[in-house]
Length: 420
Image 1: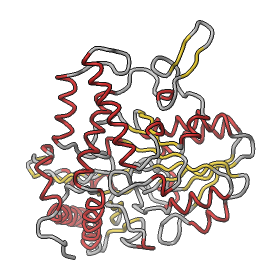
Image 2 (image 1 turned 180 degrees about the horizontal axis):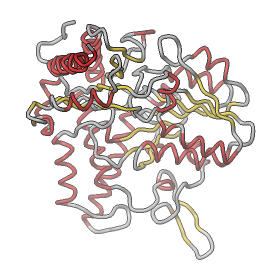
Image 3 (image 1 turned 120 degrees about the vertical axis):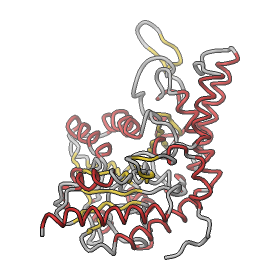
């Protein structure tokens, strides 16, 4: 394939990412582990440094100048998230440490208080552990029953089976938007519409979609959506929960302490209004401000532009991997069912273990992920112990794909020489 412009998006932005301009094991770094965590542009790094150097202070509680400035920047970041995902109100955005904490918030605050024996929770076999384990806890405590959507022959979400699984007993559907292993983009808008016909709530794990494509929670009509900042050019230790306003208002606090209160007496407390009801204690102030900067950066590029470029990169990656007969890629091909595919490829190669592939590729400066990617049940379903995963971002280049493919072929040739 050919790219639509001679100068790619990566050419425009790579100077913003100092970490990419280094050598690993004497070779130029090719960072293809973006599904695990993204790199951070100078704009985010400088914003974080500015906070700690110029106005480091606690938020909301102080009347002095530094506290007021920190509070303004912290709350401005909330407004940026609102606009980024098109929430209806700033009260619908709750800051958490990560998406895992956000899912646990819903599980403990809503799940433990609303589910009863015999109620059903529908998940899928492709879920990340963070969208499985909390619901294990809930099912064990409440007597709710877990059901699982399996895969189509193309290794995508089986919507036909979902329609057969869902019933009046279904109280919650919690599914990933984009699989971090299969790369499929699930039809979350349709899933929400079907679930709501049965009165079920829907939680969307958007960790692999929010950094790579435009997201509109009102159009999707999900009840909750979670994401992690470190996958979207923001610092680690920050994520967010989106929830519909009235639903969040109906949920009790998840954690107790400072910040989430209205008044505290010796024998009881009253709670702050949303979103602070769910933000107990001193928050990750610098990280929230860094998240706001990351959103500014991504918005400045344009999420449509990012998605288009990454789609081109993905097609090129698949073309090149498709020329290696030993490779078996999991998940749908690009453009299957018109939904497109995320910018990643999880694969196996003959009888070579994924960890061995990753180790030898690292010697060539190529960073990929190997293992089960926190999707052990999916790997058991596919009857494979592990996969190697190359995951791309908008700062990656076609030339880096060429380097990766060359190193991969040489690695496979190396292992092949021992089997002949």
